[in-house]
Amino acid sequence: MARKRIETADVNPEDKLDFKKIMPIFVIVLIDLLGLTIIIPLMPLYATTFGASPLVIGLLGAIYPMMQFIGAPILGRLSDRYGRRPVLLISQIGTFIGFILLGLAQTLPMLFLARALDGLSGANVSTAQAVITDSTNERTRTQGLGLLGAAFGLGFVVGPVIAFISLAATQNDYRAPAFVAAFFSLISILLTYFWLQETHGPEKRGTDVAKKSPFSMGAMFAALKHPTVGVLLLLIFFQQIVFGGFEQLLTLFTLGRLGLNASGNAILFVFVGVILVAVQGGFVGKWSRAYGDRRVIFAGLALLATGLVAVAFTPQQPAPWYSKAAMTTELTQHGSAAGAAGHSNPSATGEVSVPLPDDTNKGWLGLIWILVAMVPIAIGGGVLQPTISSLITKRIEPSEIGGTLGISAALLSGANALAPLIGGVLFQIGGPTLTFVVWGLTMAVLWFIARARITPGREEQAPSGLARGGAAAH
Image (cartoon, rainbow, N blue to C red; front, side, top):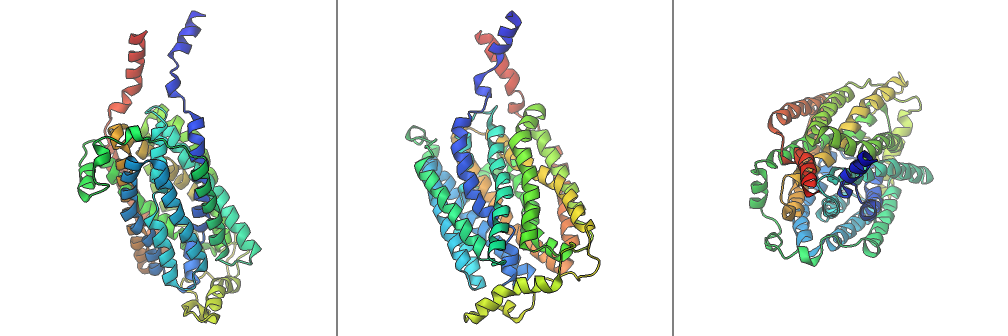
């Protein structure tokens, strides 16, 4: 009995995640991300209906993070100064308007405008990370950020399903999912306004940090020179160049290699989302506590390198239900409608800028291959973001968390801006196989760099230190 009482006393309540604090932001982010995940499987093909080449599609993919690179760090610092809730509301309103413009678009410039507006106000994720950080401690932070990632993963399951349903209900009208995404964005705004409580109150905003300029390049370079955080920020930047390019151009890859349309890609994203939910909602916290954030990061990089190279060599075998004629009609019908409405649109001629596979040699091998290859990619991608972000917050002062996460978000945005540009050039010049091989080898190089540069920090001694402190207190 005495032994049992000692074991109970050793369990620190602060080591348990407070789900009541986390649940509002989890639900809000999930609803907000439904809009994003409805659009992701659709966006490259939507641009294709306007006659966009892989390079132009890369430019379209770059405009959102380019504008986010400008907006996210400013809004991150403003959340330190004025609170998380108002900044989150501003970013959500911008996203809502962007989706409305996306659905109304009749030309490529309107697509670019819609994505630019959404990107400029895109501080959703970094501000949500700050809310999670405010509501957790070092022992529960990885699990909390993992749940935030699980919301993204769950969005990847539900969002593409909603996209599939909306496309089926409108006979593959690529504008319909944009309006559905706007509806979910509106719900997230209402939930934030009426449900979310401020986690960064006025008493926390009077520090010297809060009085600093919202953002400067000097602050970014200072963070990159930080002895323990700098290498983590650089890792976020370079791994996202690879993973961001993969996300942006996967739909074009599956279109040309397997003949998958927006609905087919939606199902592929559902498959990935199920794995992400399992990893980020149930496993990443356990793995972090059992092995430490550093080792989880190393494993994530290795898995991504393996999966990306495997995807590169997916056999060119269209799915059994594929029809080249039907796919050509689907990708040109919106262009024809825009042409009839008096808008100039290259796809109105009936030509598709991305080469489509022939109807011959249809089968299951290509689809099964890519599904298997997506497993290590989903696991690796699922653990990296929450684990790196968690390790960053454990190696800086609490007063700098919002600003540093804003800088991290800015670096992610910068990487996401470069990723589709680099990927679009590689895709158009070297083809899809070379593009994915280059990305896989880059991840392998990052694995070697991470192993050499990410050294053990104070957080790896924190659990034993807390135990000793608790024993001394008793």
